Image (cartoon, rainbow, N blue to C red):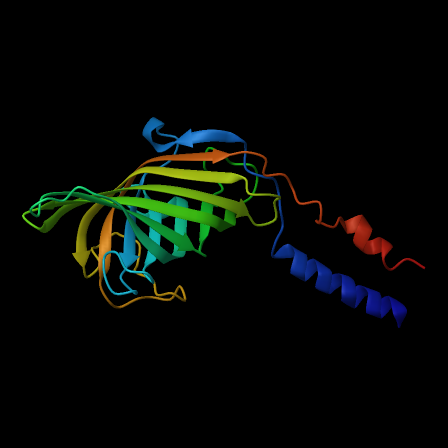
Length: 231
């Protein structure tokens, strides 16, 4: 009977463990889309909060290879929790305004075949902090353009510490309203599909730095699991 229980317990451990097998951390390095290391991308951000600069909006960005989204990287479901005006040079309806948008939650994903390949089929991680600096140009009181700089820090599931730093040098607003084709889908605050309006654009000039994604010291070996059940 004891052996039957042991077999049952170990089978359960194997089934649970098989869902989170860690082959190897991503390779340390600094990778740039401008050097062709990985694909640049596109954005489709919902106005779940109400408008272009609203708290409650949800960002969604993925790499784009000209035919498919998400092969190299994804940023999924960070929620805008604060929008602060930090510079205003608009006079007579002409000029620029810059806002700092702070996001919370969401996750990133790196494709396992990218230049950082270390053995895992893909790398998914939790976003620790995310800030966007969005500069909007106005002419005659009308918005005519918008560029953004993004900064992201994340920790990969199964690996220690915050080991991925992500910088996007140029997020470019292209349009708004109903989602344009071949852009990441609009998301609601629960990461489900959003049927309302939003804005879409390009994500360019990305830099991804990976430093110290060591395997977690809490990962149990097969030998340590068996040792728990020795006579």
